[in-house]
Image 1 (cartoon, rainbow, N blue to C red):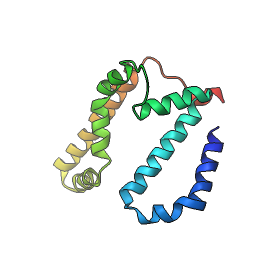
Image 2: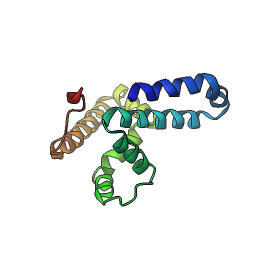
Image 3: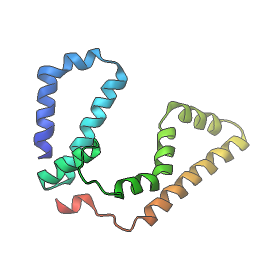
Length: 138
């Protein structure tokens, strides 16, 4: 299923979408790629096509009878999602480079920052009781 999805996507891009994608702003090119890849991951992770389409519908807010688990998960992982969003900007990358190249105090702040990020990441990993290995099924 996953391979067929990407095959159709690549064929459509080469035949129809490439000219349009070259004309739109870079942010929308990125957004298109992001959405296409996330949908591809859904196709990869679900063995049942009905469940895969149900998950895709839920991702875009079209899930009838959606439970509160999604809201709970979003609120639970909101801190790490915010940290990831902020750390993925060039501003943070530039700041960490300046701290790393500065004197001893900057290097200490740089090291402590990464230790804090590591601790937050480990906290979320340890608190997650159910973590199936995705590739085990294949």
